[in-house]
Structure formats: structure tokens, C-alpha cells
Image (cartoon, rainbow, N blue to C red):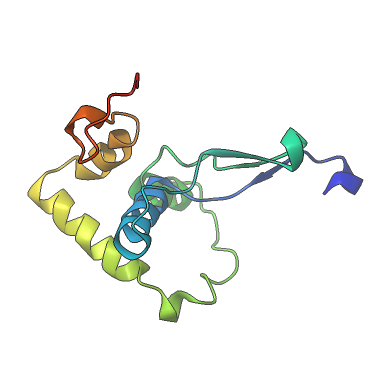
Length: 125
């Protein structure tokens, strides 16, 4: 990419992808992590960005349909081995129980109250 003078690579991940990854990482790896909206690489010389990361999948799909975009390429080649569909179903069920759950899951990553976590440590410690 550097040869072409590019400094960013944009991925099409949306909010649903981000919270699915969060749920999968928590469940299978015991880590509170997901895909960042911007990931600097190579000492800041290159960024991976996710410009659709604040939009839910339905919004992206509706826009693509209205704009008459054609799908490009296949889904992930490992999708048949993925746990992502199960994570998606869990999130759909949470959304059914509480409309807005998707956005709340996403927002919770920015609203962590460490005093009420098992370590009990305050952010200032």
C-alpha cells in the first residue's frame, strides 16, 4: 500500500460486527476486546479504519439496497466454522428483550465503571 501512497485501508465492519466480536472474545478468550474503529499500524504510518463501525447492520443494508449497490465477493471463507452466527442470535435475542441493546452493548465499552468490577479498582488507581 505504501508504494501507491496510501496510508489507510477501510474495512466494511459495522456495529453488529464489532459487538459480535466483543461477545466472542469475552466468551472464548476471556478478553474484553473487539475491533477498534481506527487501528494505527507500523508506528502510525498506516491505519486500518472502519468507517461504518457506528452504524448497525440494518442501516448499512437498507442504504445499500436504496442505493442499488450490488454485493461484492463472498462472505468470510471460514464462516462455516465460525461461532459468529450464534453470537448474532444471542444479540438478536437481547435486542428482542430490550430494543436498543445493540447500541447499549457498543456504548458499554466506553462506559466502564471499574469500581463495580471484580478487581474493584478505580480508574484513578
